[in-house]
Image 1 (cartoon, rainbow, N blue to C red):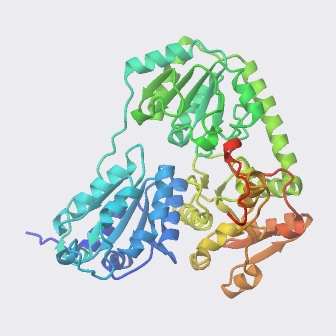
Image 2 (cartoon, rainbow, N blue to C red; image 1 turned 90 degrees about the vertical axis):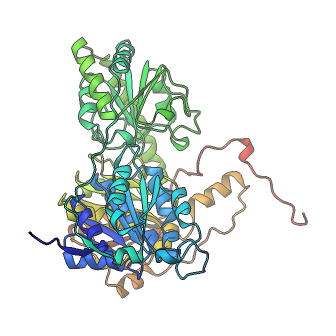
Image 3 (cartoon, rainbow, N blue to C red; image 1 turned 120 degrees about the horizontal axis):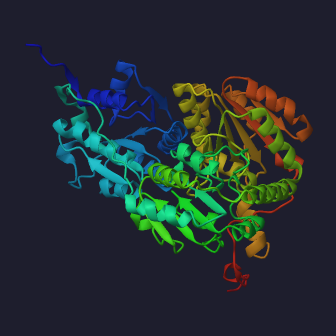
Length: 564
């Protein structure tokens, strides 16, 4: 009789993640997660990326998951450390990222007794539940694996999202038999009914100028989208849905979805099928964007029916299954959309891109140089910054559904750690993608410590830092809505040349865009990290001004008398 291998629960956690094909995890080592990370090091099969803070670790795991279309993993300590990752989990939940957050917890015998035990956070489980799709606590050594299996299954089941698991330190240290079955649980895919597909096909077949509006929930449906595109459908995407159709395809409007010429184009279409999208406020002009009618929707979440916009038909199910079923039915009918639709779409696309480039002023040269140097195989990771709002969410164009990562929830400071996560994902999966990150100086400094992570992990990434020494979007909002009263927006920023030299990070500062092509080519050709600083004080501002989401008269704020 063969004796079973005795291991710590920490080793079981590490072995299970290997079976989930997790090639890299992110976090900060602590006394309350050390058994797990000791097992990582001893087993040597999963790369652990040493973030400098839990917030950065969460952003890294999020971007790793999005850019590799796989499970992201972040590992933190308990109490304040678990609190530190909360903002990252909110972002992952906004983006629908399948992310497993494993946090330590204090010893079981002291838990939930209000003993002011070090590293304890009162009611931590409910805190995690508030910022995660679900949250679990491991109660015994014997149930750790089953709890983790349930958590991973939950994270990967659409609508996907971050799931947190607390594992008390005494349980992590417990020695048990290595379980025989470490395989993850199957993930159920929601299938649409045949009747719903038949009805959708009947309705769409009546349209001659149909559009697909693709959101993040359709990222895995590229093959089905291609079949509908071959039938003459036009394609427009949300920022999360970019790259499902290559953005140089004649049928793609890209993420030009709210501009006035596009809204006028919508009214020349006779049906829209919105797939895997919540029709968010910032991509629908606060739900006032005039979309084509009839409007049909597809979502795995039945509660999305009628939300934000009244729909004329709704199909609940996995987007790939629904679009495949629709394509099969339309193909059998010999359906073809009006050929003039795509000609109209291209004209509209060219009009809005010309307007965008005109509004960039001198920075048209930057965008064009980046696009030319990047080629077709790159990750495009953006922070919330003035540059991203003006152009980064629509340009650069990219060509794969998981090539773009951005902070969907609107929180600044996440872009640089996200670039690290995407670069680690490219390295571990062998995708060959160079990662290009876009950040503003205001957000960049929030996670400045992660620059050391960027260097230590030898990330193949170029960070483009747009440095205007201010919160540019906030300043524009003050000009537009607060009578030009500017306050709390000007920033003291580091000398990045000296800072980068101190941590051995290659750096270049561009003060004249004529020098950009040579500097950019050198930065992208070099394997490893590089900080490319764009001195906006020297170059000047954008021709167009972005002042946040659309406003109405109620948003205008009168001056407050000084003696009030």
